[in-house]
Image (spheres, rainbow, N blue to C red):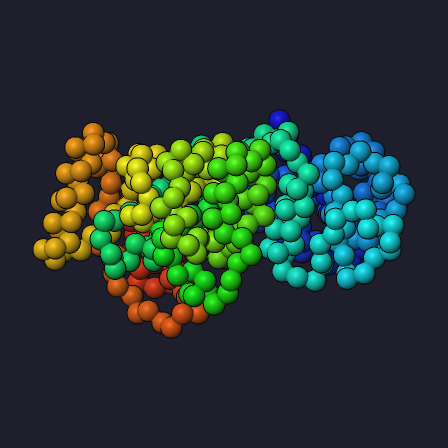
Length: 336
């Protein structure tokens, strides 16, 4: 089956084409993208093809467009538009493309009560875990570097599942929604979970991520079944090819989550106390009868890199650090 059509119509040629280029670079967009800079071309196309989602400039909207077979119309607003367009949801045009898409997906999902009728065209989703019973071992830095490097060629989602991620402090900005909200929708058995998630997605370069929780209790209080449902939704309904799970120690049933991973990267340290903690973890894995976890665990020793002061560029800088070289070498050896 083909993907449903997401059409964009704006009379500003540069805006429409640049926006389409941005969408085509986003590997997780579950639509086929069509851009139009003339209303006549949109109308001609819409008479022959069902358009599931239309983002259209208020200046381009007309009666003929209203009469087309369109699942959802969203107005690309320049700040003001005619009163007759108030019946349609709108997003502000002059903001970042990522914010436009996030708001469009939120509007699209708001009225969708069931999973949309499209088939996600992708290969099997690969789940990679990054976990260690140790602290201060560069686990999160490794996971972020891994995700960004993989995202150069694949659609990758990074999920931080720690009680204390420090993301808002590191990036110097807050988020309207985060993983706590997504887990709430999971517990409510929301039938619109994919669109809820897509409306929360943030980006670091090509890497997508859900802002982590701010309240540690939201990690501790989430049952294994809820994590399983969330990950199952991502692997079966989204377009992501890789999911990187940055796991902390606050999750009950960590072994079940680790068992979902195709590969587990475990940062380790060489001091006596750290080695004893690793040994304790491995003994517990055997006691709870998850020997397969040990078989797919790769112990790593990421190089410490020069940490700069928190800044919005910190995460992008990781891929060009010594740690980035280390990750690329690991991936190169895995491909051999």
